[in-house]
Length: 154
Figure 1 (cartoon, rainbow, N blue to C red):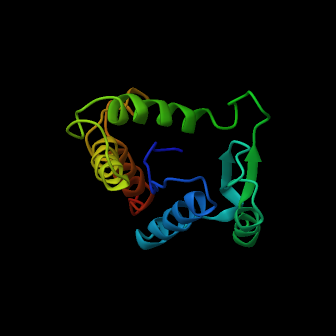
Figure 2 (figure 1 turned 45 degrees about the vertical axis):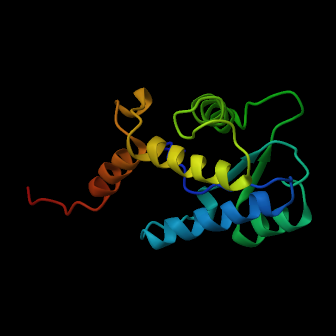
């Protein structure tokens, strides 16, 4: 959440557990691949109470990886406010407009292609006021550069 960067996503025609399991595994893998593995004790998985989030497979995966689940009660979005905001932006900027696609979506492939374009734009070109008007990828790059800076002699 610190950078607002979208690490993984999945498009699917049904709300099966893979809809959330695959992006979770992808996000953990992406951080490890970049050399910034997730420390599970610092990670909390915010979600709504959808069936895919309360499934045994998903909750077992969180437990095995040491990730604390956080599910809001019905009707509130306090735990999940950031994700709800990003979902709203996605629907407005990608699904309901023709910026990332031509005409209505006809197939899941159309949705996947448009989503890939939107996520790339969101992560690498969209300016976020909460990040000082820079994109999430640039914010992360600066953050990790600061952490990896060697101390200078006094």
